[in-house]
Image (cartoon, rainbow, N blue to C red):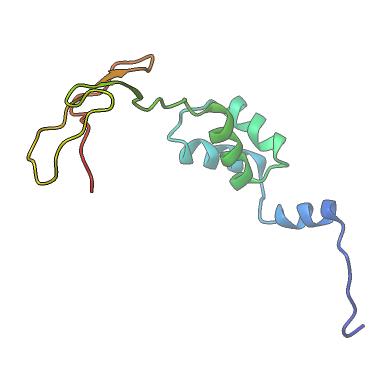
Length: 119
């Protein structure tokens, strides 16, 4: 049997990956503990059962489906206030650049949000 390639059945591999699990009640308790008790035992059992009682996969599934959507600040460019369309500034001239932007998102920007020049 040395040097023999064997294709293992994916279902068998799934069963092997779950061998570390023991009691379903213990898995439910551990799931709840890891989530900070955000989910009741029935909810934990749902995600564990859906993932063949694999704790790691169940937690991943919970965060994939139940985590809140986090919105990020968004903006759109309105106009360049400093220089008009087609205008230019001679070399070595100091000037202040000003853009007008607006919040194009659905929520207000959090305090402290600012636009910075990087370069």
